[in-house]
Image (cartoon, rainbow over all chains, first blue to last red; front, side, top):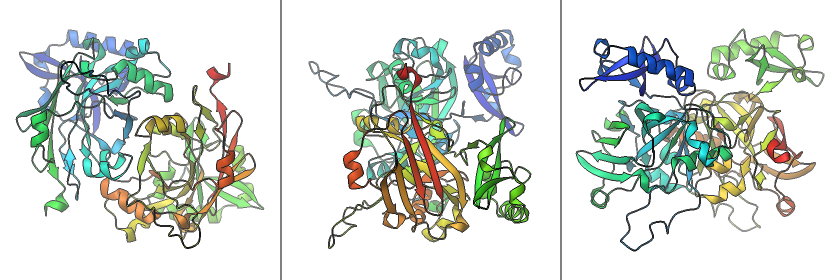
Length: 292
Length: 292
């Protein structure tokens, strides 16, 4: 199932996306729960949602594009991985030779969270803003010191995060926070695909399309640290709560895209698409002050 | 004024601390606001609190130690500085020679927040947990692209943060998140001293006492980046909201304390005291699983 959060009546409501004849419609779930996080955390509520989706007449529902989506969950914390995809190596070279022993973990603050259709405002003075297309794990059940074998049982679902980054700030300090934490620098969505529909999170193709050109294309089979390992690992150090996001890092840009790269500017659009999950398109605008 | 958040009736309430005959009493403020953040953000509410404090008969109030304190605010984000105090240098040596151009900023996640009297649980497997005594700025008014001259007008007050750190995790990756973000690794409090009572945040003595020995003793006059600069600087990149915490880094341990240093263990106690603000004592315990 695909679960969304949408704006209605001055508040936010959970919904399920139901397709008919290739068109997405919206089933309101507010009679079952107030929040997607709560649904993901509770098998009984998930079962009610499944029943409601099965019983609905999709064609009678409003179209998904008639509502405004919010980020599908409001995470208490957004934990992100740095380097987590192996590069392309020639035949005969050990692709794992440069693997670090541990994932490099950093935090995006709550002000970075953006709805799937929100434009990202490039802050005044930012000269080197870049995108990162990432598979984002949505925690379903609290995880504390879970084993690798049990880790995926704590995953509620998967969504897409664009880890927007200001490379200039990222380079100025040892810690990346100021390069990662500008307002709106974490567009998330458009929905959470529940974990039952993603039997193997290490077999998904992550692609990024910028202005019509594919700039990233790599499978999650090439990550250094699997989703199961990362959840296990993080849960040794801190408690993961329902709705928390663990973003699994971005593959490197393709060689041609690296050569042609220029910082994001006004009107640029970036689509991150991940097989089985969906796609998230983000447009970029410059800050009004700077545009004057 | 000193503002606290305390537990009552299954919820949390704001209060003011009023002293009489050297004893702290508690004036409930829930008729004025539900949250300390809201009071700090609103001059009219602050004036009501001042009037209420002036009008009260302190001796008739419950003693502060008769209630359980929570963290004085619940920050949306906790931003911390790395290296921000200059070291001691011999006469004739330029103390500013090693100053970085920009502060090094990292994030502590919401699960780190702890009440002033909460014990910090040393996670199972953590072998090198350390303390850091820090002056923490509490944002009062939203700050977006504020000048250095205007920055202090956005400060609601000051409190104390112990930036508890697992040095082993901190060293294992380029980013410090896993060394900084274990549950309860940010004891905060015991109260917020409102900004009007701290005319110069660069003239405060920060001290740490561990098991009876002073291990840190240095004035905020020796910071590389002032509170005003840091608020200005952060606000260029992201929006600071009421209740957000900006922790200003720890002075280095005194030479003798560096030599005698051992990781924190079961039953250790650390007191951070800052002139004009107060003191925050944290005890450490080992995780139950490990203690078995």
